[in-house]
Image 1 (cartoon, rainbow, N blue to C red):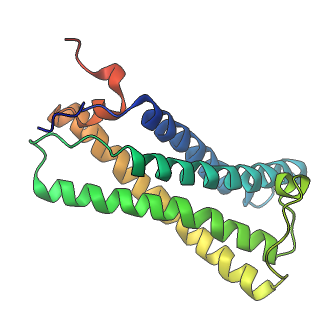
Image 2: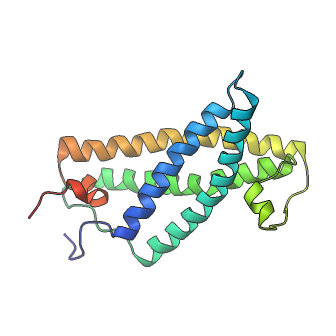
Length: 184
C-alpha cells in the first residue's frame, strides 16, 4: 500500500458529504415538484429551491474537482481486485460528469424557457441564453434522463461502499467515513 494516509482528508470528506446530501435533496425535490396535483405554492417553493441550490451545487462540484486535482484521493487497499478498481474509476467519472452536466442542463432548461434563477438574478448575473422553447425542451429531456442516470449510478456507488464496508470489511468505506474505522 502507498505510504499516504488511506483515509480521505477532512476537506475531501466535507465536499463528499455536502455533495451527497445536496444531491439527495435535489433528487427528492425534483421528483416531488413534477407530480400532478401538487399544490402550486409547494410546487413553486420546490422549483425555486431546485433551481437555486442546483446552481450552488455546480459551484461546489467545481471547487471539489479543483481540490481533488490538488489533493488526490488515497489509494484503494491492495485487496481490491483490478476489475473493481476499473469499475470504481468509471462510476466516479460518471458521477462527476453528471454532477457537472445536470446543473448545466437545468440552467439551459430554465433560462431558455424564460424562467428566473432568483439568486443569480439578485446578484445581477446576466442571462446567457435566448428564450427558445426547442432548446428548453431538449435540456428538460437531458435533465430528466440525467436525473435517472445519477440516481442509478449513485445507488451503485452506495451499494459498492456498503459491500466493502459490511461484506468485505476491507477499509474502502472507512476511507470516506473514518468514524467507522477501527481504533488503533
